[in-house]
Length: 311
Image (cartoon, rainbow, N blue to C red):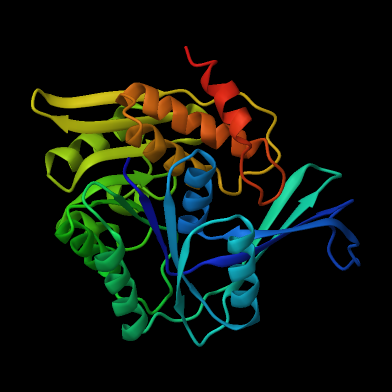
């Protein structure tokens, strides 16, 4: 079975708490503190590992929060390869206002990604990725990272006959110019490449088809919140379209739902599910994570329970 290797150049140490209320100019007494590894690639690895696929998380770490992140990843039993950096790993802080059932998400800025760190990522891909493996670039890029970082990562993956998957708002055009296996965007991210908001589902489906037809990606999937998701794939017979509805769940948090979608989708594809089933399984993983509090991801049993409800 293919291995899933994730790249996280801008990880976070996630900290989540609950508060009775959130009001300005008041001392807020918080409770139920929880910490988890964070950042797109790390969450994809956490999700895929929970669903039974071999994973490797490659990420930067530095400073006190970097040490805490290292310990948090190790506590989840994830295989990892750390790219040491001098700057402090960033903190992400999440507060749930229990009085209004609102969630506030604060992401601090990350540090840099110098040429040595860039080369360390590329070297890690060349050493770790094998034929048929998924190499996943996920999450934001540090502000000073090269615009073509994901394109360089995709090229390194393809040199080993691995499949590059991108789930980021940064460097998308450069990666599509290089050519990738799969692009995932959410209802906000895709607007950077479409030029504006598109009508669901017709215009968004057309965007997926165009990217596939132009050769930028073999597969394109866009998630659209509660509306569900669509995916386009080029086949010998032409473009195959798939669509899946979202699952109605009691949502506790949106943190990590998109990353769980990516992890679930790749696990399903690695297990040989067809496109429709794979998309439904991905939506089940996203829905199960929305059921989880704070920065916690899904319980595998919840994913299976939702997936069995697929019509």
